[in-house]
Image 1 (cartoon, one colour):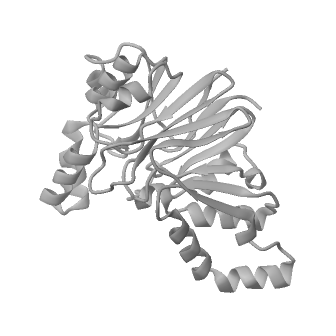
Image 2 (cartoon, helix red, strand yellow; image 1 turned 30 degrees about the vertical axis):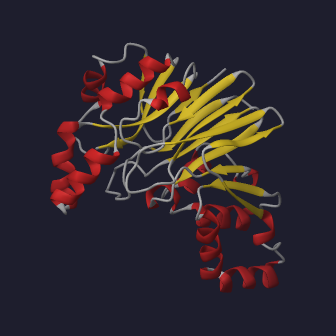
Length: 284
């Protein structure tokens, strides 16, 4: 099992448009474990197209409860179950993740009960363990360590960056956050920092297409990180590779990879990957 990071969905925000990328989800294969980080729309299809059997679903980490990070959590697990999932899936998420899962199971009770009785499937709820976490140590078992840091993503309080380490490799996920200098210490020395990023000149484009102008602008500027500031974090953390993800905007043809690289040039001179759905990075 090759240690790798695969970006399944790279778009910031919940809207999807023809030909555009999917909202946030990633697959980290590290230390013999497959870990899904966030479950935006398209995660199940993205995993299958990345070559993973959904029967192998193992660990899921949810960084916060915004819909573009959690909307397909229930459907992913349910689809894995109908594919033949037989092992336990452990979901780590912020406070509220248990309620979200219980609500999904309740909404699908007819289908679940019918498939158990008609198709002989195991009890879905018995296959899923939900663990709510806060800042600090999340998991330390079998050579895999996961730590979390509360970041700045108003109005969401329980939003966490994750540092995942195994076999001498380390990958850090910023989650959604405004420019947050403490993240540099948290990510110090990581092989890969996956950081959200926003182009300031792209904000007006998003507002024109989405509406709710003044309020949306206020949210974007208060809750997300400009690309240049993501570079500052990566430089201060001395990471090996910076991966830009949760791109704002991600589906506007007027903004190309050159725009992102130009925005990062003053603050980051190391290896840079601009996220695209399906892109895989080998860690070994």
